[in-house]
Image 1 (tube, rainbow, N blue to C red):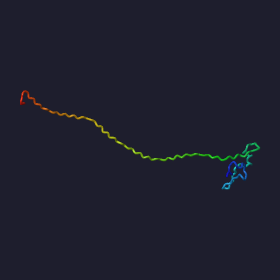
Image 2 (cartoon, helix red, strand yellow):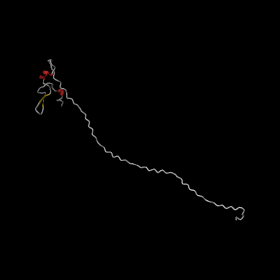
Image 3 (cartoon, rainbow, N blue to C red):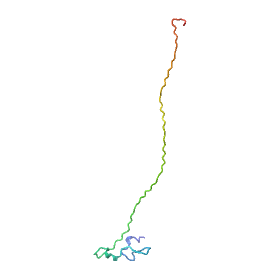
Image 4 (cartoon, helix red, strand yellow):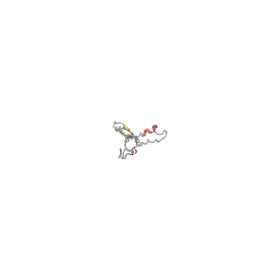
Length: 112
């Protein structure tokens, strides 16, 4: 199950470390050990180490997408007219007269 982990792969090129692709090309998974002395290692050092094959890393990119969703909101305007009747009091005075007649008879005993 875990055969192809990078930490279990050999570090030098051999028939066991090559990978065959569908196109027929052969690609090594590690550098050939004979090429280490040709300037790829430390110059002047009698012992060169093969490069360390690290495990692959994964980069994660988070993308954000903005989707605009238009909303239609019907708005009704209601106008309410208030009619206010202001009542005022204006008195209308009238006048009437009444005449009362009184008859006074002085010195007449029979009222003549």
